[in-house]
Image (tube, rainbow, N blue to C red):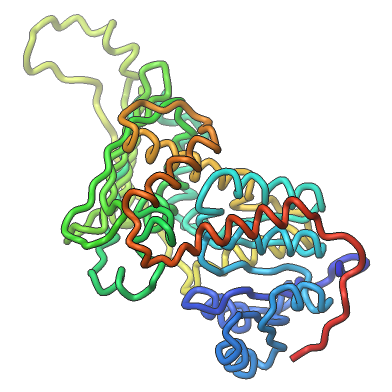
Length: 410
């Protein structure tokens, strides 16, 4: 039931108390103050819910709907496996609660679109846990790009290979590395933050050509991906990501008519050209084939501040400020779907051997994932993704109506 009247302090509930959900609950409890507090927690595992609820001194629930109906919360953090995100976000929205969702928004496009539409219909805010957007280095890069200091950007390169994982990591959860559980590999899970940053900084591409492979790991899904993004007008993007390389690299490069920007392993430098290439190329009269120098470049190394210990809380604080004072969301749900579109286009391209135009056809991608399940699934994921999709269909077919029942706190 929606809390009546103006929200004076955002009361957060956390759904899903696995590794990240438990951390979110603890962090909200530790950092809460004037704008927000931890109000309740929920997990299907009764022992886990009870343990964390008691440790944090808040009511705990084993049924998320009961927490939604309890009038204890103004907003919820959905931290379950991603295939349950749409289902829980929609139920929360129908209860009048604002939603912060862990990444990715969903495992496929259709359910993500449904949760965005449902939150809009019920006039609740939807934010996504893309906390990398709040990093100082990323905010500076965004500011430089938006200022057009680099001029027209014609090439963007992203290499993110710092996601090294052992076989034990993939074996630690039944859903990890499976088509019928996780619904994809590095493109859907580990690289989601960087794919979001790529689209946020470079913009969504028009067409995608991709190649995926599985090196070394014994998993059903890909652990390595190479993606070529076409923007039109001569602009091109390239992405490489893997969980099977050590040591890894995190590197962004933006090449423009007026300059170049390079961010690597937490360091940022920008080179500004004395003359735009588009002008120098025609003004310079040297006609030799070799040893021709372009315009002088002035480099600046940026001094970056230390990042806060709990980066995820930047999103929590921003979301509360949005609800209380109308501050723009750092990562609204409507933007988060761009990352899912990019990964889905890459999957379609890689597995169908074709270049794929964006936006992606949601049903075509759903059919692809279903075919990958039939072809490669060993059953280790226990069909949880399909189960979540069936539950979502039922939820969308029969909208929840009437007043919420009153439930007891636990």
